[in-house]
Length: 613
Image 1 (spheres, one colour):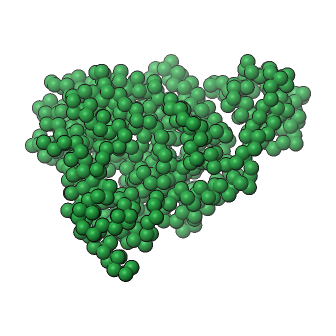
Image 2: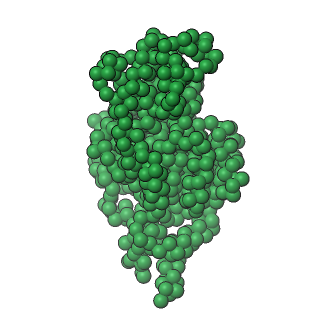
Image 3: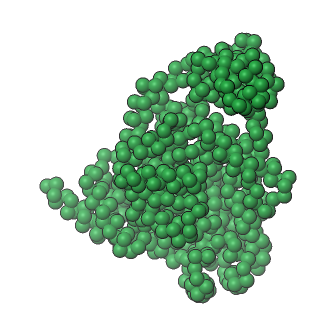
């Protein structure tokens, strides 16, 4: 029998495993339950697909979304692996035919929606089949403490418990805190599992946070500077999705949209337009993206701040899945906090939870929102902030985020901090950020008059400072524990043990503030550098290869990246292969793919070389 490395090269075109893959595969092949926590783009699917091709029976892959199944099954069939999916997108006849083929042993890998597991028809098939492994993709969905809990995932262990012979269980996710990891092991009843976290770092991603007055202007300028690139723009609400999409279309860009308010047919059509590169930019709510394996996404822009770091990192991680440089931009605005707070407070859709548990979840969600908000204000390395959230500790300098690329200068803001702490203290710790900021700035709103804050001794004490700067200092005080923001439905600012020292001027508050002109220059430099493909490649040849890939993809009705990824085209440009042997040295090209497409790409390369003589 072929070994794992031979399978890897033959079907997937890779010469070596990435970090953690071989250890996880060996664990599965030795019959052990296995849990892999790996960042998006690190090759999780390889970890269960390779052993699935080596184990004697069928592997069932539990997957939460139709798009994810369709994508991965399409890629497997393109690579020469017989695979199928079973979900609600199939008609009754198609579903029965797929089950019949499965019984006949035509498929080594079958993707199935968790809702299908306990239906009579599927159970009849499973009980009579040789199922070697059940692999749970997006395993964080099993935990109610995860950012994407799906009650249907609780059916998985119910299904496994019914099987006459327990299969190997493997579970994979990209984002899992310590609590979620423990939940996955407990709820799925993994037996003494090999649990491996390969690290959460995505070194190819450039992170930046901006707080612009006009978010749309920033998006428009960015897309104009990065024409021909594919990207995702995430918005918090359907209304903003519609507005941003309409305005980009009016500016002449090929853009589509995705949110839960569209019909199933339109969502499917718009998603396909994006995946097939007919419309390289999609504006979407967080309803879009899980399981989208599009490898050539060069940027992800968050038009609003998401509700937690887990969601942000998962969504941002849809950029640069091919390992090539990509950019993740978060556009922060104060209203984003209010909108997210509203979503958290009105989260009553989970029928699996009792009221007490729901309140605990809401409190945790509010705490996560605070940490997400702090990300938008930290002056430290953005990558390090994210990694520390997931329990990894680095050097606090990555050289590949907007904070690390910005020159800061230190400023003593003790006097301003003292006024803010004094205002919180004199108002008996009864108000939130908005009231405190408006009071010290000297506003005369109905809310301040109603609460008699216009009579407060600190009213107008910081009238010369901008509201934006006052809010920056207040956020810094909360971030550094000089003040505390409660987790109640209406978050209140409270004093901490550290507040008194600042008020008495026994401790200085020093903030790092960017040097404006240098920040702008650095951001432009970063932007132009980060979204370019690595290496000195001939862009004309790359475009020729990309045109051939698009032609083949349209003919075969598959997404272009399933034919070959940008990274593989980039590799062809660097190697400039003359024959099959040299072509097979390019990462991402295995025997099956060469037999299918290799000669056509060699021909384009040879023709191009002729023009250069």
